[in-house]
Image (cartoon, rainbow, N blue to C red; front, side):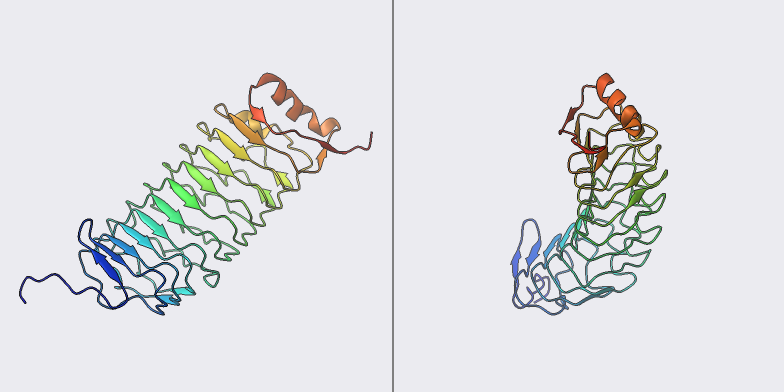
Length: 270
């Protein structure tokens, strides 16, 4: 019938306002081939989708949920022609493991990107290039071993960065460069043993910093001095050395009013 609304894909439920296609928990092994082109919300979570291909999603898509699938590959260009996309959830896809540098290229309006529990050991340089609207980035509970300088350099509007539950051992000088709007930085439950004295430089709006449950014995060079807005700090569950190396940290505590967890000493013995 001319002018009729596109048919709703099998195993899915469609809604008119806002235009929504919900195919969650339908045991789908692939994205349905004939999604209504005007759909703004696509809910495809809790399926067994293994691959994402270019052209699968329409340009009207604003919200795309693909979490808890079996995604292991994302074809180049899959997200390139989605200029309206604001939220992309790829979390809990433990077979994903690697991303191409241009995977998210062109997502100028993206505000929230979920990549938690994907077993990512590394992130390629440029992976977040151009994502200037991004406010929330979820990278927790992967296998990330390191974070290179300028990885987040284009994310001037990012307010929340979740990096907890990884295997990062050190924070370099330029790792958080460009994050002028960052409010929350969660780095707990990593393997951090070293933090560069200028690692937090430029994070003028940061109010919450979690560094608990790491391998930190000291914070040489007073890196916390670069955080004028800090309100909540958690440093517990680290092997803190309460010797001369601790002097800058204790001096910082004396001159600030930050709410902090206890910082028990692991050494020296007396």
